[in-house]
Length: 361
Image (cartoon, rainbow, N blue to C red):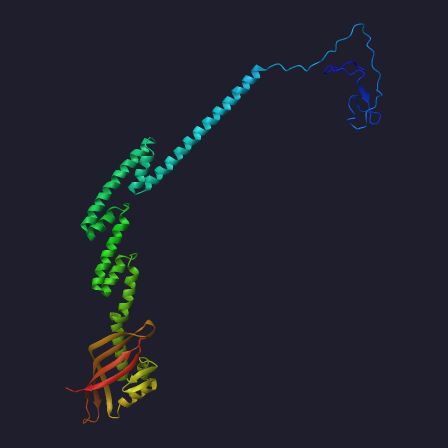
């Protein structure tokens, strides 16, 4: 019923209609109801409200009051933003400073532990304006390493094995220590290769257990053992024949058979002989008129070592033995001298035996 809108001052008297279908109130100049879209009729929903004032009333348009400016609040906001930006910048500066300090410390620790002058020089060139204590420490270390390098150059020029060995012992932290040890190793092995004896190779392995040529030296030792008679092997061969002839003297068949292989390549001219043939020999050698027999080995052994099967070694043996006989028949000889030719297998058994009678003295 108001002549104008109390909010915006637009005239509404006689200019609005009510939709008969949905009851929506809207301006009549609209073609249809904005709610249900029914066509607008000319019948107004309300009669115009008569103006009771004698003089026309000027519609009052009410406007929303504009908010008063808040200068203090805006100033405060600007201050907060400026403070946040300043703190962020400080944080970035502190981060990069700390990060730079952390890298400097890590590089210093690396350089302090290094024996390479180039690593130390790299730090000094990179951090010219950083921690002066670190720089002083590394400069002193660099001077020491440079002095060591000068000593090393003098040792290398000298070419002396003793000086190289002395340098390695007196400069345990030098970057050239390993090189000095390697040069000594090479010199020692070159000397061994000139000699090529068992003792030389054994001495090299003892002095250089982790040497560059230790595998070659061990291989050479094994090869020499296969062809070069060792003292313990000579002792084994002699003990074997001593037991054989002692068993013959005592007519101990079991003891004698324990010294021979199950199959002999030859035995007193018989090829492919067995232990039974050896036992027969013991029975035949004692004639009925023999009361005593004594075999005595002359220590003139000639022992040759030969490579056998499966990496083992066989031994070719030659020596002289004397036979003294006590007999009832005085017409028979009581003394004989024999040359013994035999072979010994890698398992320490007699694998062949022949005897040749020599002229009696």
